[in-house]
Amino acid sequence: LDPEQQDIFEFDFGEFSFLAIPGESFSEPYKILAKAVKRKNVIPIGIAGDWLGYIMTEDQYNDPEYDYFKTLSPSAEALSKMLEAVNQ
View 1 (cartoon, rainbow, N blue to C red):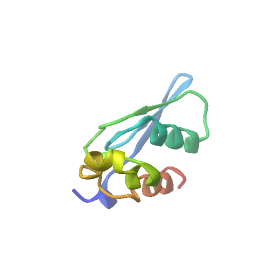
View 2: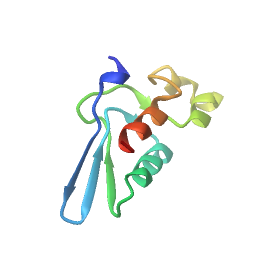
View 3: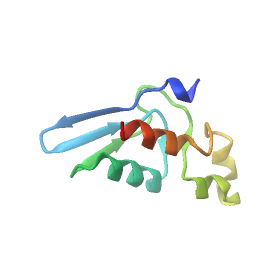
View 4: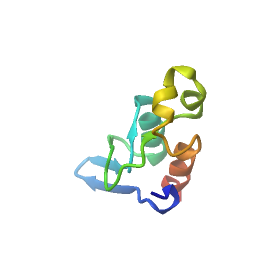
């Protein structure tokens, strides 16, 4: 799977905005992505459309406590690339 070719979907339903990402995440990356959408009531949805692996902050990626999850992560830059996509 090529992380550069994956889609992030954003859609609104009533007062809620949903952000669908192709990976699984810990709470911190979800919070960062939700804040980047710049709307209220953002609900992140993981494993949407595909599964790239675990989406982690760079601190998590470099923390030995997360070594197992790092083996299932596309890269340390995955979150920053998703933020770029959300901010386009």
